[in-house]
Length: 217
Image (cartoon, rainbow, N blue to C red; front, top):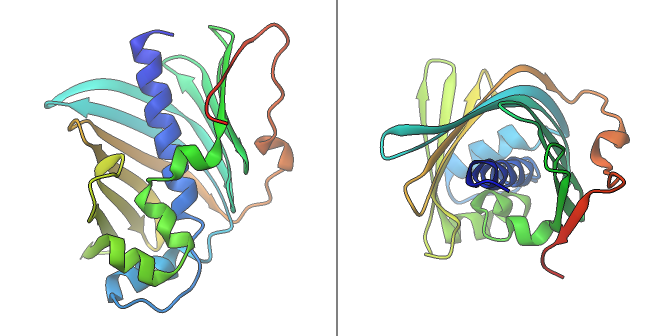
């Protein structure tokens, strides 16, 4: 797999897991009003469908641009289909994550928990006390747009910062920066909140003849 494809796969996998984890939020009392507001926005989100544009940049220069469509069904299921600049699919069935590159005929499989263990937004699915204990949450607003910044208190996170963007109380974007300074911005359009999504979107059948790489246990 080329470096460009590996980079796209990594950022798509991380972004997909981040988005899935964020959307697993459960209602809870939070010491921080900002964390409480974020939880209240995410809690009603059961399923989600949208077109996405993704830009990856480092050192002020653009590295990758990608676009496609995504589906999500909580808890733990998502499907990211990249259509441009080349095809890739990232599917989670709630237990495993499958990354498929049809041009290279390669499938990478890993446990879901290995993908999201250090994702700050994953804490939104648990106790609010865990969120406020391990992550700083701050909110700012511009008109009808709300920005929630999550910064880890420890050094074992996969990224330095994460921002979730809501427009008119709809999740419309993700902005994350990893430890190398690489920044990934994802914007969503043609958003559907809580649509009926077929379970087949979250089931992956390994194509005949594809090379399979298994990671983790």
